[in-house]
Image 1 (cartoon, helix red, strand yellow):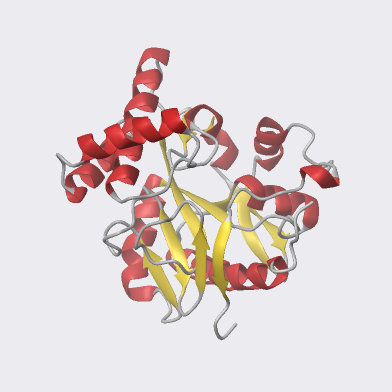
Image 2 (spheres, one colour; image 1 turned 180 degrees about the horizontal axis):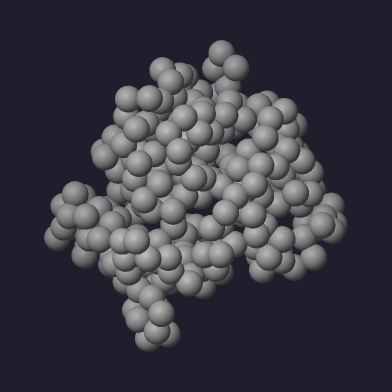
Amino acid sequence: MENFDYLPKLHDCETIIAKEIKRICEENGIKYFIIAGSLLGAVRHKGFIPWDDDMDIGMLRGDYELFIELSKTQLGERFFLQTTETDGAYGLNFAKVLLKNTVLEEDSAANDAKKGIFVDVFPFDAVPESEEEKEKHKKRTYYLRRLLLAKQNYKVCGPKEYVKRAAYAALKVIASFYSREKLCEMLDKECRRYNAPGRNPEKIVNIGGAYGYEKETIRYEWVENTVLLPFEDFEISAPAGYTSYLEYFYGDYMTPPPEDKRYNRHGVKALDFGQY
């Protein structure tokens, strides 16, 4: 098992950010919900999974766009909203809310994007109904995401992953023919392609998620309504269908993994809590 001594203080900082996101959402009628390991932590541990190092929040696309717009003026001065609009070196198709005057640098973020302690905020978009269109949507969004990462010099493979390195080099060449702004526009348009105003889809997808398109596709009915769950020293919004969600993602989710399987996904290169 890894050394997790730094995690309690990191969790405290992420809680500060989560409370600010919650404040903006509740004051403006924006629906949000914790997802992935954060949801599992809320249900199984009443807070963070003790060995987890991040926090993930999801929103339907319309709520996400409203959150992004209102955060420009309503986000507290201790925080920074990181998107491809606000940070010219950032290359991900979801937002991060950073705690200013802190540093958290992940192994994969080898570029000049801002690197503070953060909470991820993901938009969920509609999944096309036909399997053929779904496959196209998956491939197009994956390709455009990778092009943008290459354009922005993210580290996506290790030094001995020779096939991946060759593919990444080819992507960098292709990306050089596009401006950063054009790639962001193309990816954003593709993510939204199947959203229909006023119509609830059967399935939605978190295209920016770490588990891949197939796994990140969930049933809309699971998140259509939300409930409050205890999380550390406050309550946070979660999908009302969290049991179905967690069974889908984790199976027997109430049984923790053995100690030698307890690890987090993000390699941390640098960490500075600043005033916190």
